[in-house]
Amino acid sequence: MTGWVGNTGAPQISYDVPVAMPLPPFLISASIFTCERVLQEKDEVISAIRLVEVYFVASQPPPEVADLDINEPPPPNLPVIVTYAIARVLAVPGYTGFHKLQVKIINTRDELIDLGQQAELPFGSSVPIAPPSMGFIAQIKLAVRNLGVCYLCLYLDGEEVARHALTIALAPQPQGT
Image 1 (cartoon, rainbow, N blue to C red):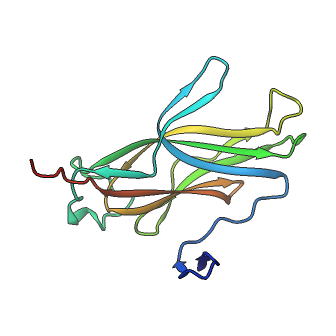
Image 2 (cartoon, rainbow, N blue to C red; image 1 turned 45 degrees about the vertical axis):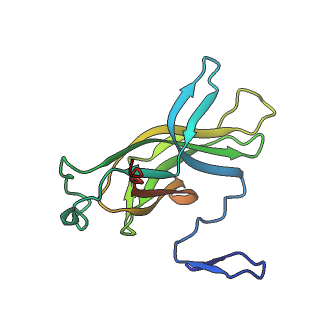
């Protein structure tokens, strides 16, 4: 699906990335993002430390790994990105029910890959008048085979409801001294 960004008279930017589907009517919002660390307090409040969207690697991955099959184990010398994904889905107040959440990634070769099994979770809230929520925190390790943009995709009952871009780039080289 092709979409357009902007409608202000400025040059429009075309992108060829499938966009997430509209939310089911019982949902208020769905989100997924990445961060460097996660802190969970005793009262169960979560803090995301250092939100990250661009990940730098020290060197270009070797050309021979660019076309490796995703099911082949990566060579030991590949750069690896370690991050945390936080997913959260909010429903309308009073909603109850169990639903399946799953994270997938669209890699730099436009391949959609499951990052684990679906988890069946309940919507809930410790405050009766608050919107019930569900979600998870997951540590993700990605072997870097290519530089570019990947997309973490959050699925609810098999339908995509949120997306987050991850850019993988070469680290800037220090200026000469």
